[in-house]
Amino acid sequence: MSQRSRLLKTFPTLRRVRSANVSSKLAKNRLGKGKRVGKALSDALAKVESYGEERAFVQRFTVDYEFPVYFSRDVFSENNSTLIEALTRSPGGALRRVAVFVDEGVVREMPDLSRRIGVYLARAGQGVTLAGPVEIVPGGEQSKNDPQIVERLQRQLVELGLDRHSYVVAVGGGAMLDLIGYVAATTHRGIRHIRIPTTVLAQNDSGVGVKNGVNAFGFKNMLGTFVPPIAVINDSAFIDVLPGRDKRAGMAEAVKVALIRDGAFFDWLEDKAEALALFASEPLDRLIRHCALLHMRQIATGGDPFERGSGRPLDFGHWSAHKLEGLSNYELRHGEAVAIGIALDTRYSVLAGLLPAGEDLRVRALLERLGFSLWHPGCDARNAKGERHLLAGLEEFREHLGGELTVTLLSGIGTSVDVNSMDHALIEQSIDWLYRGGA
Ligand SMILES: NC(=O)c1ccc[n+]([C@@H]2O[C@H](COP(=O)([O-])OP(=O)(O)OC[C@H]3O[C@@H](n4cnc5c(N)ncnc54)[C@H](O)[C@@H]3O)[C@@H](O)[C@H]2O)c1
Ligand SMILES: [Zn+2]
View (cartoon, protein in one colour):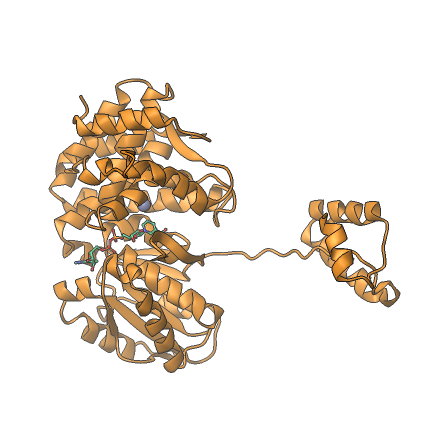
């Protein structure tokens, strides 16, 4: 049954109208600018006699998004006004109530952080007030895996009496920011949130993006929203106390974005690999900033910030990485899984004839010099039929994106190409190549 017949069956009193007329009006509206759509609606509102006619009205508006990404240091020190600026730049009432959530892993390294945040906000002035005690939240993937934590935190925001003009400030790694962003986005249909990322990955990738979410029903990021923060503050002091493992993990996203968008950045990463592997703060700081700006540019100019199409270039290397994270029982960090996923898809690009031979060895060498291990037993985990579980990641990736499978591969160091299918035999060969250590 066609949609039109279904409509008429459901609403038998609807008068039949010339369908050609309706669809031509629709087409015109689709092409038209918002103003023309607005005029069509005003005209229809004026013609009361046309009520009862079956037709479609096109609703259309655009919403501009803009948020600052600050690079600062010691954000909660008395003379640093970055957070106050972030809290007071949006229009709002005289009172700016703030709920602050801090990642447990950060507090372990900075035991007096909650107290310092309290003191900082108490002195802020301009109507800024702490709505309740600073709340410490478990960090890492466990915080995204626990369904109860979402409801507990949503309830807490309600009990604190926060509203859409209030602020949720999250200080933590990418996982905790994803969780708190989701909690803020879904409570009151959206409370403003500010991110203060504390890991390399969160500062150079996830924290400057527009997504948040939690894992559910056995899948990564199954529940979530596209809601940009109202500000992001990258504070290098948090990176100083971050364990080496997490400093390295975030570098994988820099290699990723260099490979798809910026060959000169890849050369620079090769040049600085030894210093980066030792976590020297100057090149690490530069890596974070350049990588964050490349992510921001891609989201702003890539034409699809809310991922409505099928392509997702920033997810190069991620179809297998997401699967591998689960296969490793989240023993692998996201960035560590991404490093393996990058190596896999780079080798695949060579085998598929998209990337010149030898470039795979170059990519592999950089990742290894940065200290990544490019094999995990999860890559070889198999089902009862002997098939590698990892391959199921491809279909799960397609389902998550919707529409046609679109995977970003490499055509050069710094340039990417999208494909709509991947050959399973070549994927298997690429996994074997990882197992053999690139031989
Ligand atoms: N929203 C997005 O667009 C997006 C993009 C990429 C990745 N992600 C998500 O980000 C998550 C990974 O984030 P991550 O790499 O930041 O790891 P993470 O958030 O899992 O943090 C790793 C560990 O470091 C601790 N920690 C955080 N900051 C610290 C600090 N300064 N000092 C000491 N310990 C600290 C945490 O408590 C945790 O135990 C994944 O869940 C991934 O899916 C989201
Ligand atoms: Zn990632």
